[in-house]
Amino acid sequence: MNRGGASAKEVLTLIKKVKGQVFRKTGVKLELELKLVGQA
Image (cartoon, rainbow, N blue to C red):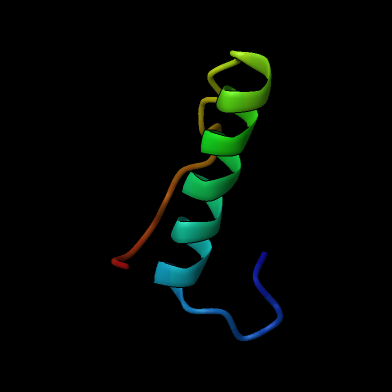
């Protein structure tokens, strides 16, 4: 849950950044296990 005032776009950007960094460093492709509701 976002309680810090970040926008949906900012949260999605962070998710993409983390997934990319994990893949580059480990070769592991993370999958989103959350259900996204609404629009970014």
